[in-house]
Image (tube, rainbow, N blue to C red):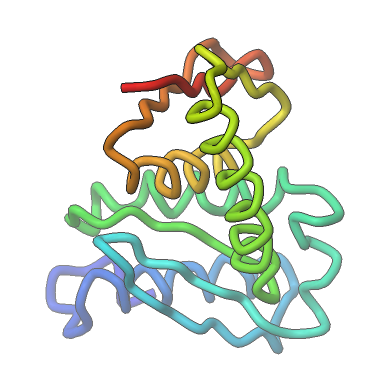
Length: 158
């Protein structure tokens, strides 16, 4: 567990990936590969392998969300300005591609005259993806409101 010490040579993203690899080993997932991609200060760790199919967000997102939470909390000891997200077998990446179509439909509805659209039932990853997709349009405003399972996305004209 070298990532916990100051004399570790790797950068913050490498240390976080090593930390995740150790967490997965402790959980019994020894053969998983971690592919890392950094996009706009977000390090996405895509865990690839047949052994991790059981913790896919498609089945139950709670395990991946818990691992993401642990990595995010560890960043303070690792010292970084990065956001850390975890994906399993590229599920969330494929989901974001599907959400592009949803975001386009929501944008069209707002441009078509609807004052405000409220979207319930999205987890934090889906909400963030729609935020980012719609924020590219300066005429659209998005906000997350509410708490816990009542957290929702509100979309309106800017």
